[in-house]
Length: 415
Image (cartoon, rainbow, N blue to C red; front, side):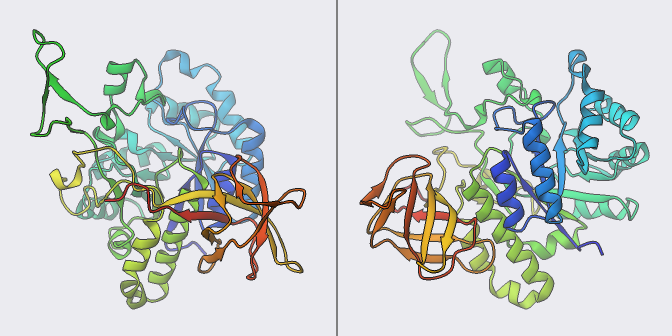
């Protein structure tokens, strides 16, 4: 029986894919080395993609592959063979935006689901119906739509067509992500996955005959981040998303850390499941869900276009910093029940005397205070400063493997 909603998580690496699966995703979207819009993500080699698909399918999770560039002539070389290969290793769907890429996919892998990317500017049901008539199974809505507009699209589509919408993560200042600023300013084409994110830069006005004299766009001597959108967060609007007809709740973040993926996926998994089980309990726990999702690195939150057209309150003009109250400290590699020793692969320094949290896939996090710590050879150590260093310390509560170790850091920027 199909679930009422799908939680779709980003996976920019094999490690993140496994984390997303274990922390509650129903599906993941990944990029190979071709045709996707995250060229700076680690992406997947052929071997990693096979391993990731096998792992996901073993846990009942689907895998979608992004092929959503706007293609030039040369991009079509080898595309047919690539799509045939993806089908052969079990990819569940392709995410495309370009009609030419769509036509190639329909020709060579006619039995594979095709999802129409948000890049295709799906802002109305007439556009959505056009794609459905060509054979699309899912429409990823443009981010510029309100709840009412999404509902109208849903109501005018066949019942067997899914709507997918972004519910969390970074927002793009360009229309459905189709940006030319990066290409113009840095010669890096956002529509080929090379975005330099110039919307996050600080800008001032310069008059051409007065070089070096910077006139702030705002009344602020530091300049202003005039394009800098806040991050989308819809965890307090699960009922509204479902009522609008959204089937797949999409989280942005293929460039993020395993801690981000684990934190956000788990928070949305718990929020969705709680609402579906008991709406009253969901309402009572909204603050908790928001607090939990806020433990992942983020900019200040907004609801984007869902409730109203964005205003100056949905931008952050004074800085482009993140809220990073928690550090990704390590990954749990083993737990010995007899000795109660947990083995950690370090990702960021932590020391004896620190209070940390172990974020487990199911259930509340496990608080742990480090009284003493040992290296791989069993020697007493005071801190773990080296990346990927193997460290052991005692934890009386049983720890699932793998889990994520995080550390609260009061020195980090907050808003």
